[in-house]
Image 1 (cartoon, rainbow, N blue to C red):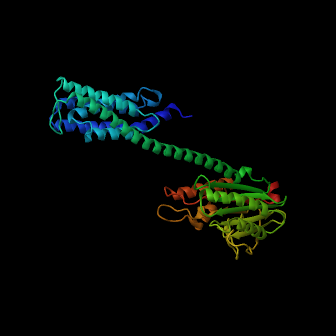
Image 2: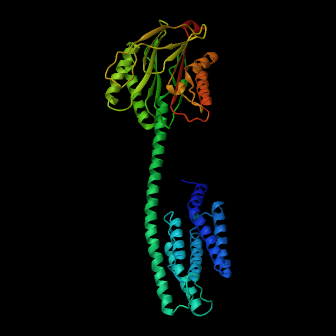
Image 3: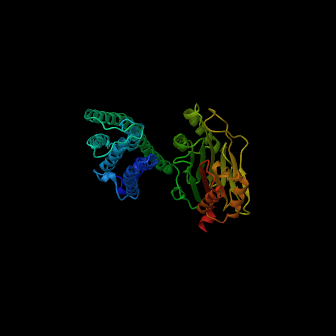
Length: 448
């Protein structure tokens, strides 16, 4: 339910066009009267200008909210009717361009919701027009016609013109109101659809957040410490990572990046989550797990434009060994505790997932020592660009990791993402960002 403040803001925005129309037309009409030498009538028209300014101020400052005051819409309608009577009086013709122009502009700009004061305006204008004509007919005011010869109307002409004005106003109001109501209905339908889309995206974002666990929800271990951070380009994104405990001694960690962004990428990401959860299990090598994931992803998206890159590693605590496989993904970094040096974890054979039905992915191994660290990331990190067109790059990332090697995994990934965002500055982010860090603590270290 919307608050009164929200309704007031909507009311002000909705009524701003008609209020500005009143002011603009009044100013132009007053100038027209002065040029025509009708100074006394111009002073009377100034009353409508003053009303228009006051009404605009009341609406804009929220001192008056028409949606809460049923009668308030009739006040400007009556003022407009009186103003139209002055237009008719000085032009001598209810169908003059000045009169009909104001009718059309006010009618169009005021058809902003279900409330329609057009019928009231038509009746009031007809009465006001007839009253002015009768004042001229009985000689109370002198006839004026800036567009032609001024003359006293005949009685039959007054009634005929009054009826014509009523029909004309109602006809204009009916046509414009139908068009405007149809347009407003389309706008309301579009806004409702947008609201549903926002709700759906929020739900998708929540679901995806659960697919991407934070460090405190990753499988805990006395010998492994984790840190993770994710920033989606849109409400939902295409990056994915997870930690899967294969056995007490073997833990698999993978990170993947789906091509594209938004909802399509998020759907493929959810699919990839299920595929990897199924493929990453048992005693198979990392390359075989990636190969199985590739077969499944090809069956799902092989005829589509989306594909995945991925990096999968398995930490073997018993043998103190790291095995890994690369599938077209940015190479993870292995930082040695003894000197802080960094090694890119690459392989000779690598390819994208979901493009070919089968590919012979290779498994590589590296020994692990206590305190070693593995850092995995998506290309949104190294390909982040600043306003000068310079990429963040692998060299800058490696230097930052070396300089901050004393930080915990959680603190390091937060620092890396913050550093990338600071480097990017005001330049728009063009890709999702995901970072995962794993610290290996040997059995002896974990007991110390």
